[in-house]
Length: 252
Ligand code: PEP
Image (cartoon, rainbow, N blue to C red; front, side):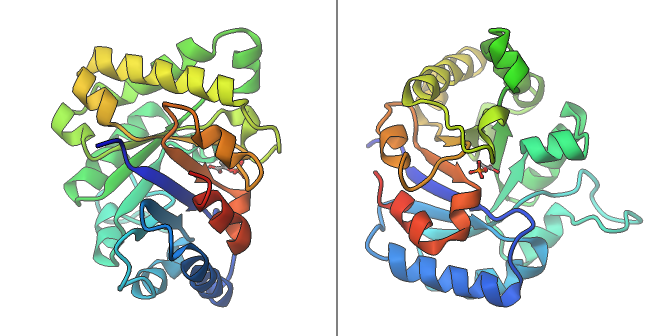
């Protein structure tokens, strides 16, 4: 059996409660026939419980959180713990998104703690990474991605990694409208599999879903998803329009 097909929508700091529920409803209606594709949405924290509750009858449509704290609990005003996310029914959590790395200066050490907390609470981690424009221009994209993966994932066992998805998101493509070409995506995804195979095992590497993220949309998803090592997408902007998101889901 091949790897899972996955389309995940990162809503970032968008929507209010009514808009979030309407969006879920429209995505549900528009993606019903694509039960072979796993759908995941990442709404803002305040809407997680309502989102989970509106998807209780779904078997291939899940809710995840955009972030979790590196702390377990206590005096950390404004933070949200992995345990809290689990208690409202989240299945997934994003760790290492470039906006968290850039705007909130999240370090590899923090990412490791976040993942440890996520795993302790039985959340599945989608670990994000990708090179910046200057790193690609300097021809250091492979080296950068290798370091990002090694620095964090070497701290986890193969058994733990069985619960992960990876998301390759070149920073220069996120929210810019400039997508990686299918060749660039395929080349990097194949390289990521090679790294995972060297760090862990060929079996883990071959079974690991690797998503592409960065201006993936209803027009370019089909070509990107047809690449041998691309198992789906992590979608930002285009996940906020149900019709576009459903078209992406229909792109396999
Ligand atoms: C993202 O934020 O993960 C992302 C891929 O955003 P966009 O699709 O808007 O580039």
